[in-house]
Length: 243
Image (tube, rainbow, N blue to C red; front, side, top):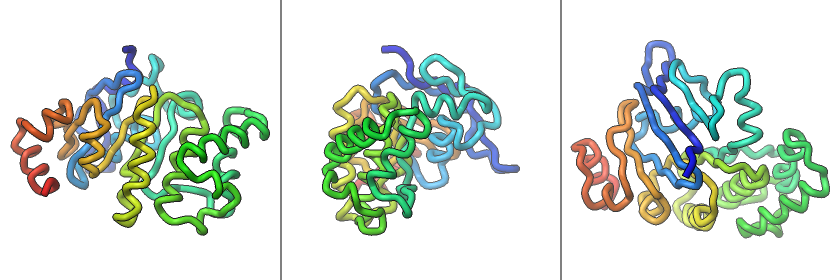
């Protein structure tokens, strides 16, 4: 499979704080990569550097063979990647349908009729077609996150980045969002997902990477991770999180 994302010697500092320390990683087209690790390990910063929501201090990110730069990052985002955030990031003054049609119409120049038809299909995929006319405030957290996933699908891009999509949800809402993500994983979309949901990692990931202190300490299949981790830090982390 061709590479979808190639990260080389990526570093990110915030002032004197070195958050990412020389990260190199390749993600194949259609691969499902799950990133795990303790809070503060650099996972979210890493995923935000991939689509230049954070500008790397040094190193490079290449998506589908094109290097992402300060100049072209918006163009690259339009073409290749969409993101699902921790806090949903829906526009409160727009209905669900308007939230979904905004980017395809404004950024990709799709007609209103096509954008609406596409949005309804995406809402159906996340089980929320009947909520098209509602405002985000009228939905539960789990429903809002499913709308955010539908919004990511609406742009039909080959890469979706998930930044802890269930961490802001009540426990009983987590599963409904994970179910949607499990279904998505069956498609040929490249998914890079930062999560604490180990069951999801086991079920969906082609590969898991463990980050701590700004480094990738270990990577392997879910089976390797959950049955036979090698690094002491990985073992310590998993023993706390897997009860």
